[in-house]
Length: 283
Image (cartoon, rainbow, N blue to C red; front, side, top):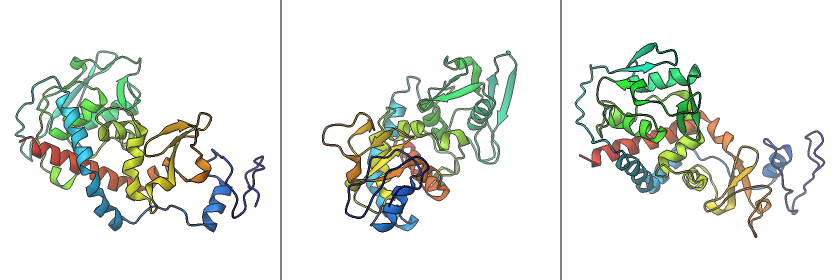
């Protein structure tokens, strides 16, 4: 069977070793997977049970992010009907105010607006001014203590904290905490949250194992067009470690996961429930 991708020229037949390919989607790989037992995403009910096995590591990561905050934690006593307001200073010196609305906290509304309008940028899982400098503390101020959820998100992003806490907000037990759209799909931000603030793609692969109906060692995670990730190794296609042959594995592209809204929602629900448990354990 020859690949139908124009200009490819590669082929594969049952029993042969699959040729190295970085194209996504790859027509030849899709054909191969249709002929053999290939990894596939599990149903939601299967994932819920397995997620419990990953809880300790993610909670420890959230605990570590909080412990690295140098400011003392403040009491959190916001009532359900109260609304915080976050004030942001623009490059022009003008200020804008954002209040909590429809369960999205004021800090997240301000962050979403600044990213959408290009005043701030998201790089390597952290937020900076458009010129690459850190956001000054005086340019991002909230009139009430941050809830424990906002505290962790802002700390992981490298944004200034007005008054950090470890308090759970009213709907925290239900993992209701709308995030800016830019954060939900940002791979490096997700890794920072689940891996103690540091960047290791293998941590993401290990967590995503619960979504794949195959042994962890039998499949690889592909990120972008050049990075391959196992449970222990991340490498580029042109710099493979000795003995590491991707043709011996099934390959799932990260976009196949991020583009699946059900699975992405479930992943975030899991992470946010770990926020809740971590905050609760600090009381």
